Structure formats: structure tokens, C-alpha cells
View 1: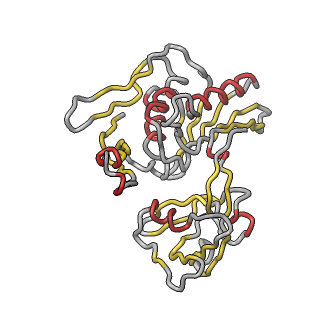
View 2: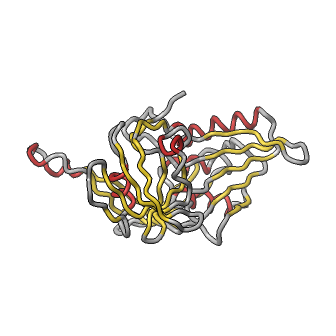
View 3: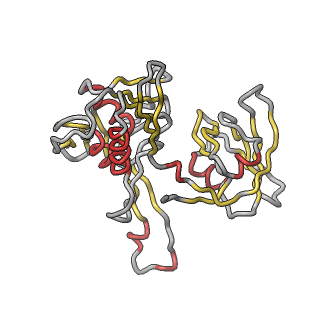
Amino acid sequence: MECRAAEGIGARLQTDGENTKVSEIIVGGPAWKQGMLKENDKIVKVKQEGDAEWTDLTGMVINDVVQLIRGKPQTKVTLFIKKAEGGTTEEITIERDVVILEEGFAKSLLIQSSQNEQIGYIRLPKFYADFNNKDGRRCAEDIAVELEKLKQANVQGIILDLRGNGGGSLRDVVTMGGFFVEEGPIVQVKSRSRTPEVLTDDDPAVQYNGALIVMVDQFSASASEILAAALQDYGRAIIVGTSTSTFGKGTVQRCFDLDAVARGKPEVKPLGEVKLTVQKFFR
């Protein structure tokens, strides 16, 4: 099984207003093994091992929060938590370790309905793609594999779960839309200085034409919204949500390597990357 690994406490985080909230505890990770940190707990402050001072996370962007909590294995980080249940506060110290992230990829399973029907379920945590390797793993290819598995099982319907999926590869969402519809537009993108560009599925083949439900919530953003909107507009899927709307992102970002503008100046590198909004998208 192909998998990815990271170093940290094994918790997925998301922004909740001015706060940082735990959206998921990764099974087998340090936080899961300790058992004190729970989903929906809010992380108010962070303190590194050996430090006396806390770092207040209020209003901090999620990427900066993640950098404070991640760290090398066998080092410790202390979190000041406001518990989701009861609203009490407590300090939790967790020893970091290597966390296996294979559950970040698409997975499927079979569900037996009360009417004794076989229902397929696919979970897609994000629209991932290996942009540094043209032969690397991509979510559209993985979804195609999972769809084929479920078709071989003769399922009577499929549930595609995009809850909490913050988006990702635009190319893959266009490809994926084509798995469920014949040829046609999937999304329109517009740059500031260019005419609108319609991204279409040009492959008339349909990987799955049966009953389809797409699950979304308020954290389904970007590519998740594009796919759900396209399938809804084509009358191809029923969209089921836990809130009145999805995230409402509507923009496309791209990362630019700052080292590229400092060629011949190794003394100032690495400069990192800057993420800029380059387009808006429309259904």
C-alpha cells in the first residue's frame, strides 16, 4: 500500500472564526494513542518543550498554527485546549511522532442497506495530486479505480463523500466530473486580464451512470464545490449537506517559488513560496 508520512501529533486542524479547531484525530497517531485530544476541541495556545511562554493562536492563519504544532519525533508540544464538551480548559502534552497518512487517499467500501441493497461509499478527503511528478499519484485516477471496484460489486448506488474536503487539483476535478457525465463544461475560470476559459470534459465515456449522492458540508470548498455544482447542474447527483451551504470559496490559487527570482544569490535562499489568487471560478 502506498502511503505518506508526516511528523507531528496526528490531528487535522481547521480554522473556526478566530480559533483553530481539531477536525479529525488520525487513527494510530500520537494524539489518538494518548486519547485526551478530541474532535472539535479548540486549540487556544501552544507551548514548546522547554519553553516557559505560550504562543497565542487567536487569529493566526492555519499554516502557521500547523508549523508550531508539528515537529521532530520524540519532541513534545503542550496544547492549551478548550474542550468541545463542557467548554472547560486543560493543558495536554503530546509527544510527536511519525504519522502515516494513507487515509488521505480515496477509499471505498460497501454498505448493506435496510432493503438488502449494496451501496457503494467513496471517501475523498481532498483533491490531491503530485505536481512534481507527471507519473505521480492523482485523485482522479484513484477514484476511477474505486468506481470500478464498486461496479464489479454490482452496487445499486454510490455515495461520494466530500465533507471536509477543502479542494485541490483543478485538473483532477474536471477529469472526475467526466466520470459521471458525457461531454460538456465542468467549470469556467476567469483571470484578471484574460477572457473566461471553459474547462470541459471531452471524453464521451462515462465510468458510472447509476444513482449518485454527493455529501458536502460547510468545509467542502473549491474543487469540492466545483464537482458538486457540476453534477447538480447536470441533474446527475443529489447533493446532501449538513449545513445551508458549502464553504463558498470561488477562487483558484497557485504557488510561486520565490527562489526563482533570486537566481545566482544562494546566500538568500531558501525564500520559500508565495500563494497567490490567480483566478475566479464559476459554475
